[in-house]
Amino acid sequence: MFPITHIGPLTIQTSWLIILIGLWLGLSIAEKHSLKRGVEPSIVSNLVFITIIGGLVTARLAYVARYFSTFISDPASIILPNLLTVDASAGLVGGALAALIYANRKKLSFWQFADALTPLLAVLAISIHLANFASGHAYGSPTNVPWAIDLWGDRRHPVQLYELSGAGLTLSILCPSRQ
Image 1 (cartoon, helix red, strand yellow):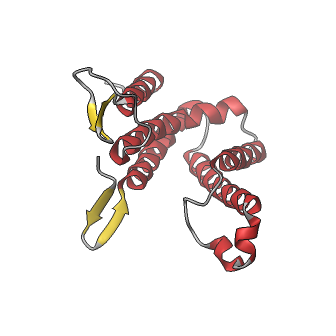
Image 2: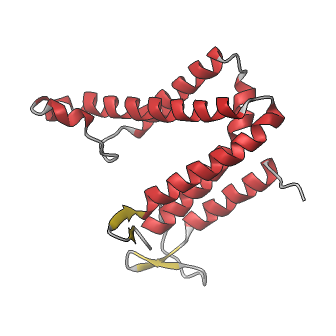
């Protein structure tokens, strides 16, 4: 596992780097495929940006509301960026709500923007499972199969790679390359 990457003097969490690269790559592919779905590429990139901002703000505010007594003594800490102090469920809801509002204002049907975002979501699924593999998260149960990986002092199923394969298959079915 590779939880930390060193690039010169920088120390970066590998999982977040993989997810950011996946987001960039997925957005690039989604923008190329969006014209086939009748959606301008700029609308796709704006939709993703608004979804991310809406999701992060909602996730942070929900976490602060849940643990308000912790933040009351130091209100400035509410705006400090720390991805460990967010409510992921609330972030998903907030991001989805922001996306729906933006799509509604641009007069996109749900299926139109869902089709346009499918490549992005498939690439993000791949990058999330790859990030989990790099960091050692989302590990499988102990096993004796020949392809098991050594993790946390035991031989385990590489479920991250199983899920990565499924996401890759989904991407290849939904967005076949033109050759």
